Image (cartoon, rainbow, N blue to C red; front, side, top):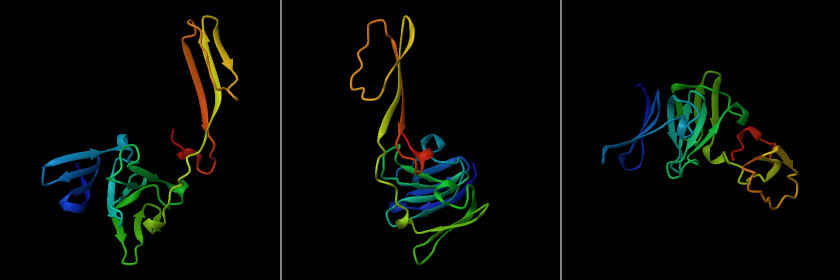
Length: 180
């Protein structure tokens, strides 16, 4: 497995950017943890690693930029950024990251340079409201649509054995990044 970048964090913990994800190695205990796309990493290859003043790691990957918070619990450990978020690259390059003395981060990629200040990258703290858009109940006579608007309670008969719901987040600013 190829190692592209090594970052030393608090208490000597090593973070390795590899061809198959992000690896945490604790030399004190000998323990390792491998984080991959299944854990939320946007791309399987981690080319570069920088850390900010809050202990978060910023990762240049094969499929966008990612902010990793080692202190958060899944699924909130990774926040991924792609060109829809305003970064200039979808794929970054090996050894193409720099934290400047004035606090800016530079990540080089296939389509140029992405420059930002980590403390200025803020997520929208507002959780978008959900709207129920469709309810279907299945019974012996087939599917039956139930009007979802204003629905507060749904009573099912003993032969109605399947229910499906459709819903939408009411946020159109960055709809593809809504998570349910």
